[in-house]
Structure formats: C-alpha cells, structure tokens
Image 1 (cartoon, rainbow, N blue to C red):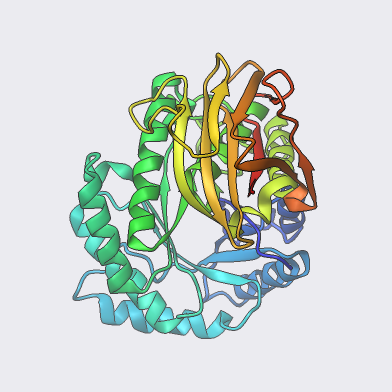
Image 2: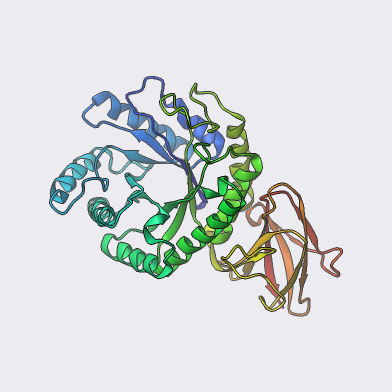
Amino acid sequence: MAERYNFGAWVYFSMADENYTVKEVDRWKECGFNVMMAGSTNVNSEAEVKKTFEFLDRAQELGIKLILDCGVGAYWGCTEEAAPAVEKRFREVYEIFKGHPALYGFHAGDEPGSRAAYENAIRAVSIQKKVAPELTPYLNFRFCVFDDDDSEMVTWMKRYKEATGATMICYDMYSQMINDAGFTRYIKCVKQMVEAAEEAGLEPWLTPLSSAHHVYGPSTEFSYMMQITTAAAMGVKGLTWFRLYDRKLASNYHDSPIDEYGEKTPGFYWLMISQRRFMDQFGELFPRLTRKKTWLHGFHRFAYPIFGSNSHEIIKKLVTFEDCMISTFDCDDGYEYFCIVNLEKEIINSIGIEYDHEKADIKEVLLNGEIVRPFAAANIESAQIMLYPGQMAMFRIERK
C-alpha cells in the first residue's frame, strides 16, 4: 500500500467500557481515518488487554494504525527522579504489544504547558524511543509556551529531536473555529510550527477541531475541508482531530462526529466526505511532496507574503477578487507542483492563472496523479478554476 496522508482523532473511551467495542474500528475506516487513538488500556486487566488486541487485529485488516494509551510512558510526572521507574514500567507494557503490525506508537501526553513540563516531555519521549525505536510516540503540544517567538520554537524543536530521536511533532490549534480573527491566528501559528519543524527536521502534525465547545463553534462540510486543505498546503503531514466522540460527562462539548449516544451526527458525514475526497485526490501525493514556499492572495493575515507578479518564475498572476492560498512543492518525480486553496468560507472562488507559456506547461493533477490533464491557458478567460470553500486544486509545472 502506498504511503498516505495521516488522518486520526482523539478517543477517550476505556477498554473497560462494555459499549466501546471493536465495531468502532469499522466506523473509523468508514470515516476515512488511518492513524487512530485507540482509547485507554489497563494492562493489569486481562480482559482489556485481550480487547486491545482485538482492536489491533481489526485495524490491521482494515489498513489502520493505532496509538495505544496504557497509562505509562507519558510526560506527566516524568521527572529526572521518576524516569527510571517510568522506563521500567513502559518496557513492561511494550513487551505486551510489541511487533503488532497495526501498532503505530504509544500516547506520551497532551499539552505540556510549562518549561518544566517540556523537560519532562523530552524525558518521556526519549524513554519511548529508547525502548521502542521502531514506533512513533504521540505527544501533542500547544503554542502558548513560546509566545510567538519563532527562534525559540526552532531551538526547542532542534533540541527535542536531538535529545529524543523523535521524527514527528504535533501541536493543537482551535482558533480557526471562533471567527475570522481566529482564522488569522490559525494561519500564523501553523506557519510558525511548520517552518520550525522543517528547520529542525521534524514531521509536523496538527490537532484541528471537530468538536464544538466553549467559544469554538460547530463544524460544517466547508470548515472540515478548509482545515484539511490549508494544513496540507502549509506543510502539515498529519491531522488528529479533537475529538471524535461526545461524552455525557462533558456536556458542553457537542457537535462531534459521533454524539454521546453513539449516533453519527451530520458532522460525521461531513468529515467522512472531506477526508475521503482529500485522500482520493491528494492523499498519496502529499507524502511525496516537499513544501517550498507558501503565499496568500487577498489578505496577508500577518503571516505569508502576498502572491505577486515576481513571486514565481512560471506563475505570473492569480486573477481573483477573493482570498486564496498557494503553495509550491518539489516532488520525488522531479516535477514542481503547486496547489491553490479557496480561503473563502462561504462563496465559490473563480481563480484565473496566468503563467509563462514559453517556459512551461501547467497540468492539472487529479486522483493522486492517475489523471494529469492539460490546463487550458491560452488566455485568462480559459485559464480558470472554480473552487468551493476550502477546496484545493493541484497542478504540475512541466518546464520546457
């Protein structure tokens, strides 16, 4: 199977919950997930361990990888004094599950919020990589620790990679589901995270929002797609949505893809179609791409530069009155690619592309490259593409 873009979600069920059954893995597959949290497992319970293996076995059948949470190996309490005991206990848990083809890694904690917690995070992930070097620890960070200091984030990520041997890093970002100012902060923060990760040699992942709560509004088909396409265009390599299920014990959380009664909400189908569409069109292509540069058209949002006539040697102009994002990539096939994302949240965006015909041809890329078709561009009237809110289009530049 070709490498694919990573889609997952946060799951808080315990394997002790009799209503939480292996049938959920089939629903994860239906929704388009391929790297999922599996809930929590008490390894002192023979029944919970057995059930966890049932989840792993079914996930393997369906081509899904699982992140296990066994209550050990996380940064919480992983001080210098506690580290030897943490390693001993994590090694015991690893011995239970090691070697299963569906095992992606183990949960290492969520949102360390202080510099002391970040030190604990280094120790915890170092332990996991020492004991299980073939696996990927999953640790989710938050942005506020660095106060938008790009240089400090780069320094931290380089140290994190060197000290732990980690290959990926994940941050959560929810402000895009508040208002347009929140969307601006989302773009600024994801840019900061991705560029720091790229410089540090880490694979950047993002935890976007699929569950309304507090000041964060409910999702739509367009907002799901917008979060996917903008993240991918900015260089994010994987998403773990927060969160998949509503729970009776957290009643302020609502509008998740699956409600507190175990029923699929409209959001389930919006997320499903968004993930499936993205995977079918670009999911096998993006792992082959290396981001080069990103621009915005319209409002710069205090993040990326505005795309202009001198931004790119081949692409000379985008003709549209609306906001959009454009990114260029190198691909392992030797071509340069670029994508365009409609950043308008409610309206269709008609985008014209002017480029230098003497230097290159532009081809539209569909279905992960299964279809590569000429993009008519003899004049601006024929060189247009129409994108619904959050939709992405992908192109290949064939230099002459």
